[in-house]
Image (cartoon, rainbow, N blue to C red; front, side, top):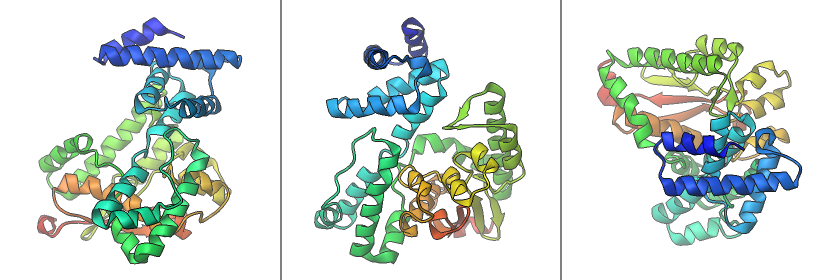
Amino acid sequence: MDIDGFRKFLSGRKIDQRVIKNSLNTLRDFELYLEKNGKEIESATRKDFYDYSARMIEAGTNTVDNYLSILRYGYFKKLNEIIIAGMEVLDGREVIENLSNRLASEFSKELRDSVFDDTQIPALGISPDKKPEYMKRLVAKLEQKIGDEGCVQFLNRGLRDRYEEWRKPDREKFLKSKNIDDFLRQKHVDFVAELETHLKNGTLFFTQEITSDVVDYVRNAPHIESGIRRGNKIIIKKIPHMAKEYLAEKVEQKKRYYYCHCPWVKEAFKESDSPISPVFCNCSAGFYRAYWEIVFDEPVRVDVLESLLKGDPICVFAVHIPEKLIASL
């Protein structure tokens, strides 16, 4: 393990010395764990990562900082298996805690407790294949307590954090655009360019490998992530979570697995076409809602038009353009 190189890597990103010290200690512990099993970090697999994660959970060391330490080393050494596993742990980690907090604040603590009566917030770092069972129980209870329409309204406001600072630059780009169509065109151009950069550098786009086929697929489909305007709506389709595998796959259920982004649902598609109530896809609508509310600086409505959980082959959303902006179309 390249401790000195990693220290320089972290220092170059102006990370606090206390955090660097903790990161190095975490990496040494991970290295010792792997060595006892006849392995090393540079060849560690996702299974090795989650085996170690289970040990961290048992020891109470499964903190965000410790997972970030391992993830950063993955980026430093370009270890895709470690990057993917680390991102899987951190992506969407806030969802169930946000669900709990919002139930208490928007309804009551009593309702929250009745939904969570036999479900604890899962430990950070659990294996992805254990996540869907938590969400299936919670969504079933939620539907029972507040009804289908209540679930739609509640989930549509989103369970992810809003990532305000991350999305503010797009607000500035929108303000500099001629109109919404111009913004969407440039957004698509920028997205394709981002994927082309990952292809050129051999780096991951979040957790997926980018190939020339993936770039061509997105280039020819401007509705993917960027969106296209249809009247007073923006129609958006998700990029497959594992686009390379999705494009090559012929079996429909496997394609659903490769397509799904949700860390609280995805693994269940290995066994079922509809593992959780389709109402839960309104959480994904909430993800887009947060983005467009920041871009437009106006309240936004987002509808689920198609979703994997409803039996559709892909996920499609309609963003309703705010009334104040329609006149400029």
